[in-house]
Amino acid sequence: MRVLSTGTRGVVTPAGSAKIAGMPSKVYIVDDDLSFAKLLAVNLTQAGSFRTEVFECAEDLYQRCVEQPPDAVITDLLMPNIGGIEVTQDLRKIDPLLPVFVLTAHADMETAIEALKAGANEYLTKPVNLDELNTLLRRALAERPMREEAATLQQTRKEKFSAGAILGKHAKIKEVREFVGRVAAIPYPTVLLLGESGTGKNLVARAIHYSSSRAARRFVEINCTALPSHLLEAELFGYQKGAFTDARESKRGLIEVANGGTLFLDEIGDIPAELQAKLLNFLESRRFRRVGGTDEMEVELSIITATNQDLESRVKRGVFRADLYYRISVVVHLLPALRTVRDDIPILADHFRAVFNQEFGKDVGSINDAARARLIAWDWPGNARELRNVIERAMIFADKPVLEEADLPPLGLASGAAVTPSCADQFAIAKGLSLAEAEREYIRLTLSQCDSVQQASEVLGISRKNLWEKRKKYGLLNEV
Figure 1 (cartoon, rainbow, N blue to C red):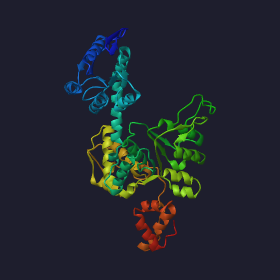
Figure 2: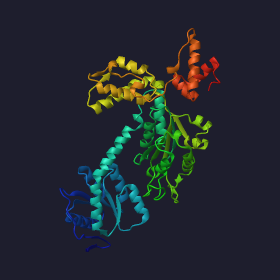
Figure 3: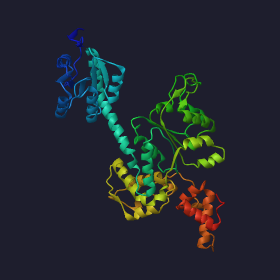
Figure 4: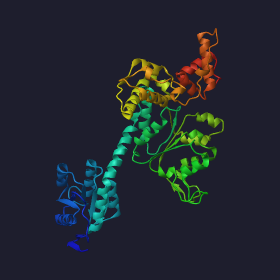
């Protein structure tokens, strides 16, 4: 290799470079030292890999970028009016994935960090090694399609799991969307989502993640009931080689994988007692050790937990640690059961109809009034998950442009909902009871079957205040 001198600046010619197949990529070079910029352009062009254009100032570069967008840009750091850091920031606003390389004759760590924070792919010092620059340019250009695909996937996920994807016009659903927005603005929140099975706790957890500044990082989910305690511990915290019989290699745990993003612990109420203390220690310090390891690791991530159980009741029964409950319940939100937002049932049903139209390649345009009335009348013990199953089955067999009542499958356990018998299933009105007496008996039975007043109020479809008034009226205040 030989150095072509330009005073204090220079470039190094490569020993040889393979030409990229097809049309060479466009590389724009902006530097107030035109002699250096032109020499760099000649060397890149002679390498056979790139087409180059040279600009003396950022304003000229911007104008050309509007007329003909480049494939990559090389910019000097120190220039009159607009420097390389600002150039990088401006180009990133136009094209977030455009490869940008910052060059400088006087390198220091502070400006290097500043350039990389602004979005530069690389920060290089003069004289420039063309072998290195060629390699970096080729790599950045080759990686761009993958980055575009990843960005498209990321955007799709943000749209699919945005707060706007939580459908409904009821005030309770609006509160959920507002809750997502507030929590997503917190850097690394600890959130507890409560609600019956099928109320959308997973969707809300993802909405919080993808609405936050951590959206580009990992969303990692684990169901605490899916594994026995020793395997769950290994999945969460990872393990060192030799920690147990089958640990032939070290493995990162899900906490490490989720670092910088979000860890979602579903069914937290079922986490084994022997693991609760270790989880509590991690939540308080954000530090942990792998199973069999001695090195302590520190992470920053959001923690979202969810359960369909009454954790306060489990704490009282001694099966869930009180200190762990207090730690995970920093921010709590109860997701409404579908029967409590009954007017939103047609909205969700239409959404699922559209989803399965696309999935099944059908063109069912609407749901008729009789079918809607039947859907609205059902209590949906399996909530939105059960409604989705019902619409899916109906769409499979639908062969008309309108979904009719006859297309709906039998509602209840036959619809595929995983539910337990409700209070209503076990309630029989004794002959001769007045309406008030029947109401008292039904409320009493509901209270006896539910774990909390909140759950009973949801089953009955009334507010807690209304339920309290009825309990007082009928002498049932001591029932729960």
